Image (cartoon, rainbow, N blue to C red; front, top):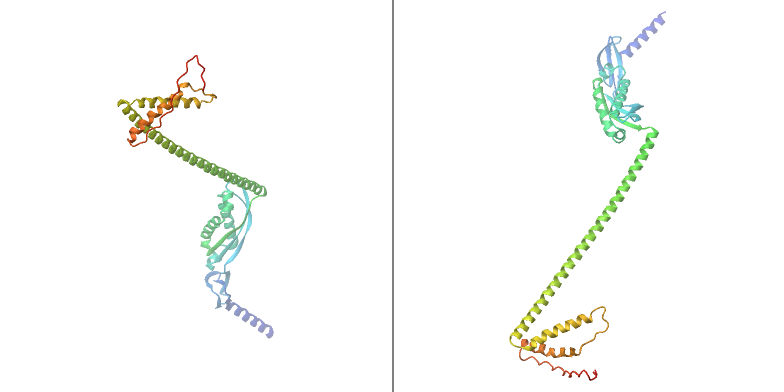
Length: 325
């Protein structure tokens, strides 16, 4: 009987010692309750409690933890159904709040995150949902961190892992992408043709400008030549007029011979003229050359050489006599 009592006493002592001494591991904090009411929090290390009066309420993990967000169907702003999942990183900063402000911390955080995923993606089009992951993550982090702050929890990061549209929608997007690429290719090709046409038109414009400038320069040179020719003719006319006013008969012969030669030249250059018949009086033209020489002599001075004497004109035969050339 005494042995049984001794064993009971030893057992009670061991239980009391286990209730008395507590060692909290690194990375954890334990809440202490007295008669069921929270009093304080135990940090990592060795602690002594009053047996049967004080007890451990919750053992809270203070390290950063990862929470997987299960996939769910979300309807976007343009009524496209996509399947979304993600991952959340969070850390408990206040063990007492995390233990007593919310009944199930992980379940509450998970429900809050899934609800906000539907809210954020539901306000965006499908294209925005697929292309703006960083913006989605930032919005979710801001909303969820603010909502979990009263629980003593800090949400450090939220990442959307996958956004999966339906298969038919993926095929439609592939066809749309292909059409868009073909459109860009056609636009680039048309732009190339446009640039080529512009360059060609610019080259033709420059060529036309240069040709017009060449014609302008040629016309200017031709007008200058005509002006000099007219000045020469005017000077010659003045000289001949002065000679006529002085009573020089050779000046009159010069005008007559000049007009005669021009008429013969026009007749010879006619396209339908094959045979040119010269009259007998054509030999009289040579006699007019003496008048030209005399005028030139009077213009150049007395030291100029005398003009050659033209050959004598044979007498015109009588009509009854035959004419022999």
